[in-house]
Length: 243
Length: 243
Image (cartoon, chains in turn yellow, purple):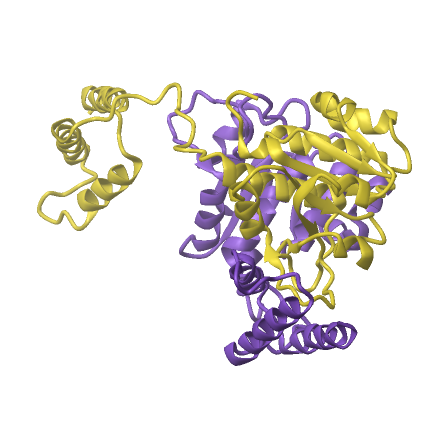
């Protein structure tokens, strides 16, 4: 595959999912985050119209999903797998937080598929299933209420995988961001404003208090653009005429 | 409120949600991440049995949800609001990535409620609605397919808010993690192993190749525990008897 991404080797494995809506929502979550390889172990209903509906534009992920009879079969060709589970387990392996697991999965050296394994909505993963995974991963939640829906857990993990694999860079450019005003323009505006409020009688130059420093602070925070200054000064000029 | 968290002042606002299942899933996502204040602007169906079903253990969040007739009403008492939107907008304000928005929301100085605003499943937020928010926020997604389900977007933002507000600390303790073996015990085991494989004829001490360095590397990676060494040496002793 050209332009291969570390996400290309990652399988999202759902073991014994009961609700087809969750399968569809998981596919949608995957595709939005750049993951495409869904593996289903003994899904109760699949294919299914509800899965298609919840997948929205990600029905191609569903169509390409691999269905297996057991987790062992699903993981047979993988070189690394981590179980995603909220339950404390009697396992002598320290779990990973979601963010750390994502960064480990996308930076694993070598070749071969790697898997993130999610359990059934109600029963979770069995100890035998967790035993097939080299690590286990936990999504940080409120201590009082740690219950995440299956599709939501898939969403969080795919989001973390996406961020671990793809530097989002700077936030998207704003189409209509204007040219920032320079200091001279800002100062000319503030002088204009001061002149007008003195003219209107709002500001007494003998007792100026903190009015202009506060205006200066306000417009500094806003970061004025040239066009905005033109508008503001146009307003001020219209007030001057009136007074 | 005692032990107040920065999450206590955060409102999750869903504007014109069409599908009650999304309202329930959003409530569940909120509660799992320690958020509790849901505001619904003109929900198509609410209260609703499907919302309750999707909320699972978070029906208390639904019961406490505030329903408003307009976004303006929902945000009236807030001191800061950010719109969550995937669409590029013609707004002269640079958007925030989800993670940065979360850290800004939980660290805002001063008092008063702050809001994260999500739009309708199909239409998103109107420009007028976005205009009521001081900032806008985008969840990083695949460039090819940026479509997130409403409840999934709420889940990602609540997850980021949780992490921004609550240091998850070290991963959960493993109940059955044993006592790590010390170097002397590891070396005694490796010597024992070497003795046994020489005794069995598997290792020729005249042509040792890389067998023992490789075994040393393998067990170093595993991080042996004392109890495991006892078991392994018991096995070795049983092999010695046989040979």
